[in-house]
Length: 436
Image 1 (cartoon, rainbow, N blue to C red):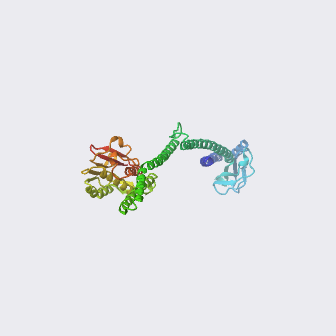
Image 2 (image 1 turned 90 degrees about the horizontal axis):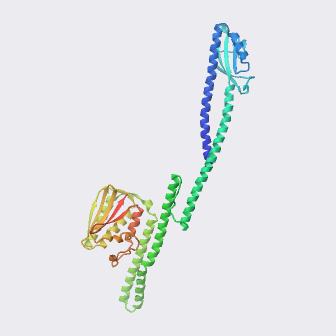
Image 3 (image 1 turned 180 degrees about the vertical axis):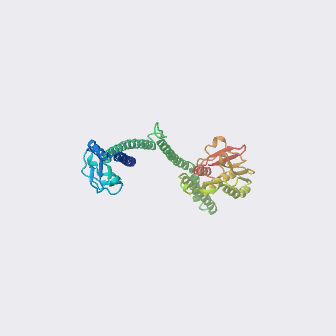
């Protein structure tokens, strides 16, 4: 990167130097021709006074080794006075090669710009100046160019090397601290005492990644503990029933009943493992790539219509208050599962006569959805843990279930970045969802 930076810097310097070089060339060339025009005008004045030839000789005596050239020739092209061998034929500017020059920087002279002017009597006046000054200028500019480009590249390499060293050192420091946090040698989060905004953002992303890793590890540990604790009871009960079935081999009817209960127990355990697997996949973000724009209003209306007859059969009622035309980007199947779990929870854990309301509105805070009921609600001390796996309140211990329904709801909401709030309706409970 430092070498590329140096090359880019050199190209920029070369481009700027080329523009300056061209402008200086143009300026010097204009000055050269202006000087020749002024000299020609002065000599034409001398010609009108009959002093042209003495004026040319005087100029040559003063500038014997200069860059200026003069020629006064007759109608036949013979030189009358001057220091130039040239045969004028047409008037105007001409550029011709020049040889055998003398004087300071004469070795730079390769050609001469001549201004040819016809005079009375068939004579020709030719005044010119060679390009030795431009050649000397080119030599000096070339030297300055290489020195400037070399200095610029050296500076770019030095600054790039220092910047690269600082950059790599900062990255190494961040990665080393992140590795120590992962191995447990140090506690996060990563904090930068000083540094650029980019490194602050990098530290923030690393912190979020480490936090996510920590959450996943904690979930794995919690799942292991929960499985060991909450599945021990059904497995123990299953073993006891199998022992009973073994002892009841002389009583086919009781044995068949026991086996049916064992199969139901196994189905419940399998359903629990299936729910755990779904939660793990959702938390691993496996379904996030399938997010598509969807009609959220239509989803709320559909879920309310599907569960209205189910609730009526259980002695409850389901009402819908949905603002039409509200859209959201997400996984429709997962959001359907989330709403279904919330409504089923309200149906299963409320007494007969409970009214369940499904609402969706666009407010100042964005799109807000709500599933609320008029049942007994959830105690305030339990609201912070009902979304954890295998958590069941005392009032729900006698009803079937694994305590994973709200955990699945929390996983789907977290995947879609939907904040969940449990609100006390006195009486009743409301689960508020903010679709941001």
